[in-house]
Image 1 (spheres, one colour):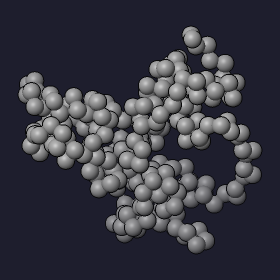
Image 2 (cartoon, rainbow, N blue to C red):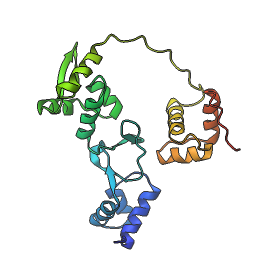
Image 3 (cartoon, rainbow, N blue to C red):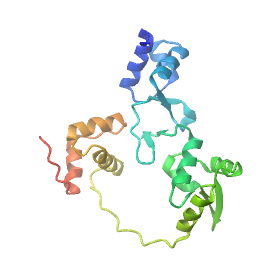
Image 4 (cartoon, rainbow, N blue to C red):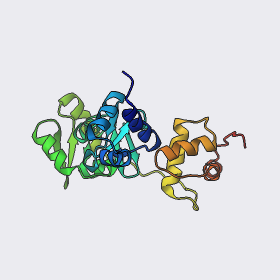
Length: 221
């Protein structure tokens, strides 16, 4: 069934704004909560795993990374949708399990209490390593190799990579990530994709990153 005119207006709103709350849509379009929700449900959507799941995005908007995560500024979305399912997956699939600090940093939101609850429910295993708790897969076939890897002596850290001094580090990392996804993209195309993720970059900045890392991109002017 095709969307009603009001539902189509809701989808158009999200097409122009990657992320929004239901209240923002209702206020801008003067439509009811149910109109917004029905439009999103028929089309498909994600809710943020942080910010109390207040933010919505159309199903095609998130560009998930290898861990199944996508951030728009501080707002996080997960291919696994909810924060508990995301935490479970990350801890169980990690080669060496994960600590609360590691997952909180990755997800940009505190998860220590959630991890403790998941361990109490038997959905995660918890072992002590010094002063910190390490969360692992609950089943022995996965948990054993994870713990063994966690207990291995740390290797010497690799030499730090020099970054362009005149560009912000988050921008440089975002440009490099976008190239991995779209290696044939032009600077302008790359910048448009970044804008969809809430990152402002100019074609010249993209070229500066290419020159710095000697990527030798063969772009048309």
